[in-house]
Every structure is written in C-alpha cells, then in structure tokens.
Image (cartoon, rainbow, N blue to C red; front, side):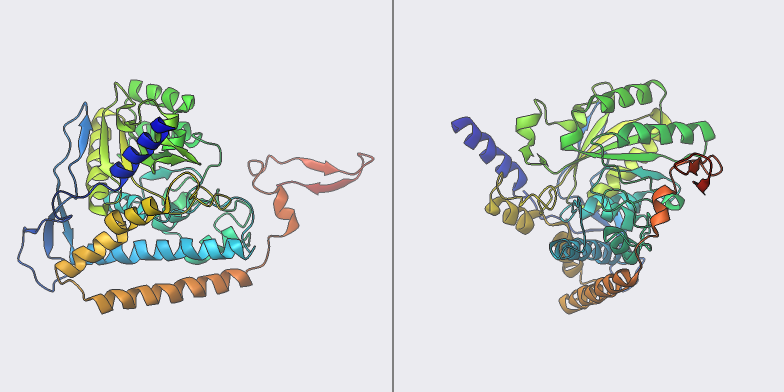
Length: 397
C-alpha cells in the first residue's frame, strides 16, 4: 500500500509538474501587426527529449491565423466530445464510446505538420482524428448514432470511423492491431515512391503488445516511412502506466529505433515534432514519438475515470496543462484577439454542434440490407440460397 501511494503520488507530480518558465516565450521573428500571416517564433513549453537522435529546436514558427484556427478546431473537438457524452447518457449512442477530450493538441498539431496525402491510422479513440482529417460534425454524430449519413454509413459506430480519401484508415477496435496495418501503409508509400508518410497511433495501454514490436522490427529493416505515435495519457483502461510497464519511457522502447518525447498538451510542440519526424522517416526509416498527454473522461463511457485517480489530479491537469487554455493564453498575451472574441467563437461552435446533432438525428437508420454490404470485394460476392438450396434469395454484393 505504501508503494502504491508513493507511485501514485509520483505520477501526480509528473502530470502536474509546474512550468519552470512561462509556457510561451516572447520571441518575435517579425514585428507584431494585425496581419494574419505575420510570423511569430514561439518556444515550446518544455524541451524535447531524444533517444538516439538530436531533438528539434524548441522555437516554432506560427501565425495569428494558425493560432486562431488551432483554438477554433480544438474547441470544436472539445464541444463535440462533451456532446457525445450527453448523447450517450441519453441512450442515443449505444455500444462502446471512447472520448478524446484533453488530447486535442495531438490531433491538431499533427495535422498542422502534414498533408492529406500522408496517412493516419489509430485505435478506437478516433472521433477527433477523423474531424482533423476533414470529416464533418454531421458525419461524426450520424456515425455515433448509427445513422446512414455517418462516415461508415452507420455501421462502424464510435470505434470504426474512416475517411480513405483524406488518408484516414480508421478507427480500430483490437488493441494495437492498427500498428502493423500502419506499417503496411508505409510499405505501400515507399513502394510507390510518393514521398508521403504514415502516422500509426496507439496508447500506452497498447505499448506492450507484441505485434507492435514485430511491426517496428520489419519497418526498421526496410526503412519504412512510418511514425509510431504513442499517445501516453498515463492510464490504459483503469491501469496506471507504472503498474503495467516496467519501462514507461515509451519513446525509448524502439531500442535501435530513434525516439522523441513530446509535450502532447502543447499544440506547437506536437506540430514541431511531427514536422521533424516526417523529414526524418523519409530519409532514415521509422521513429517513435511519445506524446505526453491526458484524457479527462474515463477510458470509455462505462468508466467513471475517478476510481483509479483523484479528482484533484484531473482538475490539476486542466488548470496547469489544458491545450485549449494554453492557446487562449497565447492569443490574449499577444493581443491577437480579445477574450470576448474567443467567447464568441465558442458560442458559434456550440451552435455548429447543436445543428449537426439535429441533422444527424434526422438521418435515417441504414437499410437492413446494408448488413451484407462491404463484406466482400465488389463483384466477388456470394449467392444466398433458400432453404431448399434451389431458389436464389439474394446476391451479396
């Protein structure tokens, strides 16, 4: 028990560590102005930590336009997930549902560093990643409620979002199984010589999966352009990382593969790390990024999220490290917008989300025949026969 209290206390101190300097240093590379494209050079909240690699610079270039888009996009994700929580409790969303609030900086910072030609594949906490790839709120809520307008036609639900045309390959329910698939996507990219990369995301709970190391080994042998991103929110389901992993320094887990530890609650740090990683893997093969982040909700909707951690820990992270509040503070500090303008953006987002929910509720349920579609490659379906095996009842597409 004493050991448990000590470990839990150490984890809380790590999660709530105070910043030794202001989160964002005032370093301009151009004079401040109202111009949306004026470049600011801002320091990340804390340094990067590298394994077998020199970490990138802490100085990140950004603009007023980009920071305001970060604020809007992360606030939209936050509101979307809070609304999904309410819809689940109203029994309009059924089955599994894993929320991403608190981790928005990872999805948004990653998108800022790459293009839609690059690929992303993730686990079941996928709503915000889908939205970041260009998905719409109506597609999100329709899919969550099992409606025809959903991104997977209402058949995938929370864990199986998909948007191939934007390079988003899911949404996977089997723990860790998406990582070998991501390495396969990277193999195709290298084979095609199209100078694109794949980001394969997984959580700290999946970091001990054997298939992850098998995929990493072959990726390193073949110098595949894949970035393994460990979204370390410190709890795999209800298990603290120190209980499940002898070495929770996940960025070092590749041994022979370079790694980088990143403050996953700092959107600019995530952007810098992902840009650095993309350049690295195109020349040298795989790298591991460990995003030090935090989820506010429980693991899934059946998990209250407060039995294995204290409410003080959760509120402490919100106060000290919240990714949206960090960007809000930066915008206000540099007088890019006033507090009332940011509040107006949040009010607009509430209306957007409410309207998307209204439209999603009006979308019909999938036709029962949809049970048989997307099972076989088109044109290679099978015939469904009657009981006497003489009368053809249907042909499954």
